[in-house]
Image (cartoon, rainbow, N blue to C red):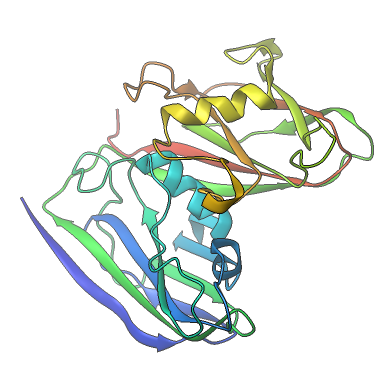
Length: 301
C-alpha cells in the first residue's frame, strides 16, 4: 500500500476569515494543521495560540464529519494519541518562533486502511478553518495544512467527531443531555467551564451517568475527580502538575472512555436504541461542551 502526503495550504498569512479548502479524493488518514508565529513580548501560552483557531470543520456533502473548536480538537488529539499537541520552543523570549500543530483525524490510528475516510469525488469533502488574526500575544502568524491519503484503502469505518454545546440548565443538579444514535460511541470528551482552583471542590460537571433506553449502562456514577484520574490511561505525560509545567491539555477537560483498553470490547452501540442520555450532575449552573467521538460503519455489514 502507498500513501501520499501533500500540501493543501502553504505559508498562508493568518487572517480573520473562514478559509475553505477542497480535500483530496483518495481515502484520507488525517490532516495536519500548523500555525507558526512569534512571541509578542513574552511567551504565548497554548491556550492563547489555540484561541486564534476558532473552529475546524470537515463536511461531506454538507454533513459534518468533524466540527470542533480548536481546544476540543487539541483534547481529542490528546485522547487519541496519548500525548498533547506539539507546541515548539517553549520560551518567553520576544519574537521567538513557535509552531503549534493539530491533527484532524479520520481514524483512531494514523495510516490505518481499515479506519479512514473513504474515497470521494472532487468537491464533496471540504475543510473549513475559522481563524482570527493573532495580535497581542502571537504575531506574524502563518498557516500550513497537509493531508495524508492512503491509496487503495477500502475502509470499514471512519471516525466522526462533533461538538455538542450544552446550555446552562438553569439550576445545579441533574442535566440530561441527549446523545446521537446510530453509530458506536468511542468516547465523550467533557469540557467544564468551572474547574476547581481555590478553596473549592466543585466542577461544572460534578458527576456523570449513562442511560440507554432509560437503563444505566457502564457509567452508573462517576465523579469528576476520578474521571480526571482516568486520563493517565490515555495521556502518558505530565498532566496538571506544578504551575511551571503549565497545562498539558487545554484546561478543564476530562473524558468518558468506552474504549479504555484500545481493544473495541466496550464501544457503546447506539444503533437501534430509543434514547442515549448523558446525565450530568451539575455542580455549577453553567454551560458545558461535549465532544462525541463516533465510529461510522461503511462496510455495509
